[in-house]
Length: 403
Ligand SMILES: [Zn+2]
Figure 1 (cartoon, rainbow, N blue to C red):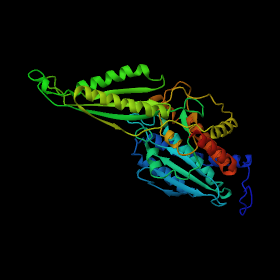
Figure 2: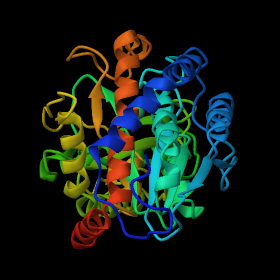
Figure 3: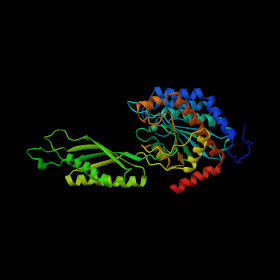
Figure 4: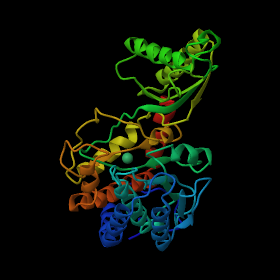
């Protein structure tokens, strides 16, 4: 039943009865949602190549009255699908996010099939009450979380413009809403020197391998001065071509990480200085290229509290933040609008992410139930935002205070 007359612009307070209908809509579409999860699971596609998954997701959204833009922006496999509320545009734009990329050689070892399906499930549930809402439901299908940073590109493409909140569930071996992903970037280093015969006239050369060894030594010493939660790790990809040639070119691939964006920027500047110093000491030149990458996460406790309350209604107790964080481009989104990235268990605790066990868990009956629950909870939080403008305001107030 609509929560008010269609002519009214007065927001209604969130109604438990509406939440029950959201859950019923997920249940009514159970087969389609789970079939999508399983189809993506058995057809894994890596970052930027999720063509089938994106097509299947777009197809499902179109069936439920969404206006689908695919591809959206510059990425071939990005989706932006919208559905306006029946009570006018004077309301929030709530972002329902989904991911669908797999890991090379492993498949859906991060369980993104459940994220695609639960995002679609939440969008379907919200579509069933769209006539009663003011504002806009915005579904964002986000490619390339595992490599590169699809969401960073989507932000640059303007696809997050005007979004009031971004909601994205991730599968896990625990239930928790707080996550502390690390700011992270790939760094490509190339030292260029001058070749010479290593025995007859080595003094004529400029040794690019010496520069690389100096850089690794400097990084090793630097670690003592780094905060315990910072990370720097790298490998040498090119170290020279023969022992009797002074190497004129070496190449390395490093990664830098920190949970704090400001500290990450300090690390980056210092890392560049170490590379410059190694070049100066060896008479070589250096090129340092930062990939652009995942940023740290701005928490939004206002939205987190709504997730926790919605989950508690289904008997889910929050187990506290995951101490072993990787990196995600959902961090980038958290610098643009109020964001939550809650996780729910799809397997027993202790199963590592990015593993065969986690991949297999992502298609079990337990993962299916979690996928459906995630769809209901995401839709529930989204509905609260539509129904309560004060909640949207509070989320933004916190966002601005953090920024
Ligand atoms: Zn993931």
